[in-house]
Length: 518
Image (cartoon, rainbow, N blue to C red):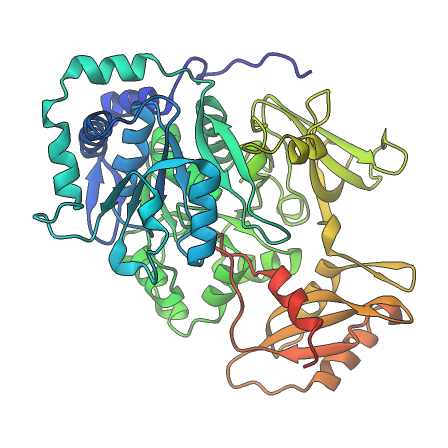
């Protein structure tokens, strides 16, 4: 098993970390939402009020509290209030259909649900939950947030202290459900110290500090939001500026108005920024950013924005712990690798067929071990055993290699390898190639079953506004630059993408489309 690891988060829970941050930063802004500006002291007071009301509602240590909510200012109080009560936070994807929401609530065993009913398309799943609080309800309504908080008026400080004293830093505090692109969503069980460290070490690589104002449109029901964004004020002292729903034009306006110095975005976010007509006129004060994108897009963003970028690598199941480059590392290193492992996280590249660790620059599956590894998937020991071995190594399902200096280079998602007539084609290679074409705004390659070759590539392409290009032109563009087996057999044009809550393009939905005649 992995060696013991010690850092500033030893013995710390989320609410203890919040208390420390209040003592250090007090009345400084911790979060800026579209509907409120919250100081550290505001967050602590709101969280304690939620803790009192949860205790009064019968919530005990280990009970699950679900939050179905976009980027509203209720999030910090609910998040830290639930943690202080000893409850387990269950963020629910607000893009889920009612059946998916019902599955998450049932699988998690949630006893309490907070939602903004005015945003919900269907709330038929709600009656199965013991306590439902509608954050959009008027104060006088029985299920309103105000009515909920009034329940806690009789709960004294001693009861709050007793509830928090029973919580261990190694307790599960977050059940983060995956997107469920290949099966029903899986609930990764994450602990207090794990997610604090995940936010800390990613922030360290970006050199986050109290001087930073960190913009995010990342939803809190995704681990990038529930771990990195939510905890950055505690781990770095930086102010987080939250956009409720992503809109590129509004995001650029918010970044300018709030004088943001850094941001986090997936490839679709950055593509929208690059192509937005108002961007050149904006006076942005950005100095650095996280970017989760292909090498080609990273290069385009670097040129357009003129700021250093890093691509952190971590997964929900690793509490976002993994690897990262330092923001002041040489540009080519930041462009082509995801850096070295975080302190206390071990990295291994293994050949699955030989079940052997490979050498320098040799490709294989990426595995991690250390403080960030989840406590397994909720109520699913079989799936847990598939990804965590007896020695504690977590199989990521991603392919990569490590250079002589210990830097990790991602090669592809193993599931994103398309097998064409016995040859492996990495989807990311062809996607990057298509992005070099001046008419292409966004591109995704998926595999389609083929009777002769087993699989062939199908490219989904979004054209830049006002720029014409035909499928034959793009296929010819690829044929001139890569081996014939890598060339997409078909190009399908799209105007809108299926998007996961994380901001990533929903490749499984595109794969499903190619099995249906176009």
